[in-house]
Length: 71
Image (cartoon, rainbow, N blue to C red; front, top):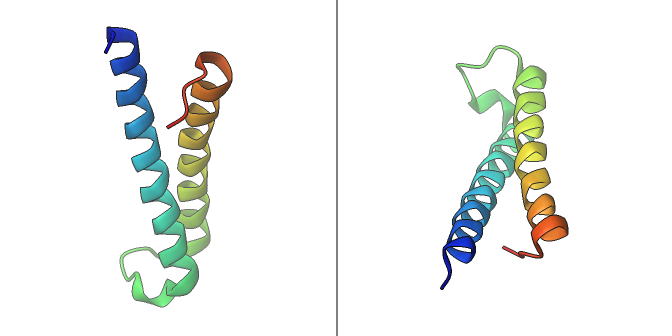
């Protein structure tokens, strides 16, 4: 495997994992917001997680559109 392919694979795998992490956090907030005691503002926390999810989703989309790499 070429270095370029290894790098794209590493970035894609990382981005996919981070997107999954932030999606899971949103799901936890939406399904059980009272169970998160340390966060006083759930809406703010959900917004942050959605921003992070969007960032990693954008990276995955860029890999597909610009480098024809599909994670």
